[in-house]
Image 1 (cartoon, helix red, strand yellow):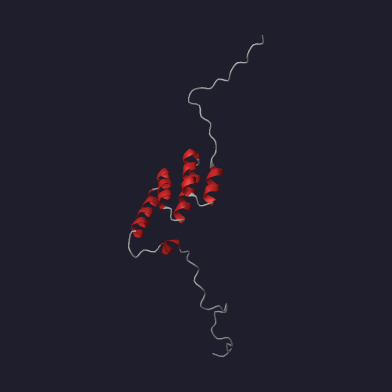
Image 2: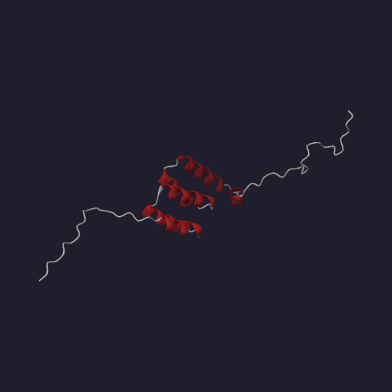
Length: 124
């Protein structure tokens, strides 16, 4: 009879870290913030948590954004969330205002020449 190989020994409480970033970003691309949050809870970096928080905030998923900012202990963004939530409770509130992207102000004078007189006279 052949001797059996020794079994692998694992120490108690040994963990294996499996990166979850790829799964997180797939859900973020789909704007599925609840699923992204569940994946993040399995273990992602602080940068991944911040990406989740900011993407959720941009899409006005304030619940998920709050959970992520709490995980990051980011009090400034938590205060901002509080102000946004208070604003949303106002009867005259419109979410379009929060989602608006300001466009640059068009130049009222498209002429690159700063001189308003197109034919300047050499004489004063």
